Length: 127
Image (tube, rainbow, N blue to C red; front, side):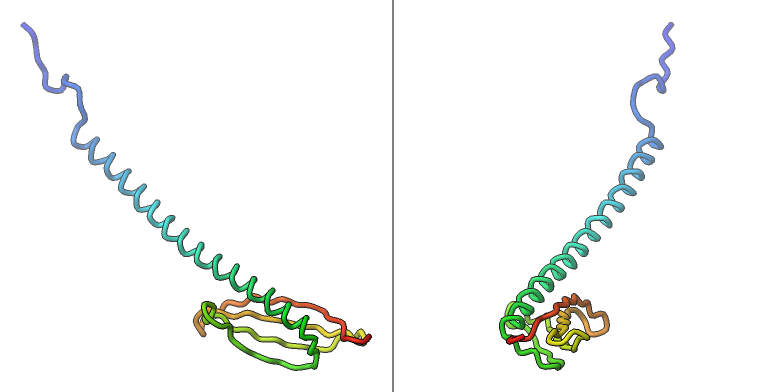
C-alpha cells in the first residue's frame, strides 16, 4: 500500500506566498519613495545649475559695463528665466580702486527663496 500524503506534493503554502508578496510590496513602496525623491532632487539641482549660469552671465555683464558706483540694484531675468531674479550689491574695499560686487540670483517661493551668490572684486578703470 502506498500512503499518499497531500503535503508530499511540491509547492508553496498560502502562508509562504503571502509572506513573499508582503516583502515584494514593502520593497516596491521603498523604491517608489526613492524614485520620487530622486525626481525632486533632480529638479532642485537643475534650478541651482540655471541660477549659477545666470549669475555668471550677469556678473560678466557687470564686469564689462564697469559701472562700479557703490550701489544696490535689483532686476529680473527675461523669458524663459522669469522665475529668477537678481540683486547686485557694490561695496568699497579697504584697497583703493577695488570694489566688491556681490551678485545674488534668487528663485522659488517668497517664503522659501533659494539663493546663489557670486562675489567678485573688480578694479576701477584707469587705476
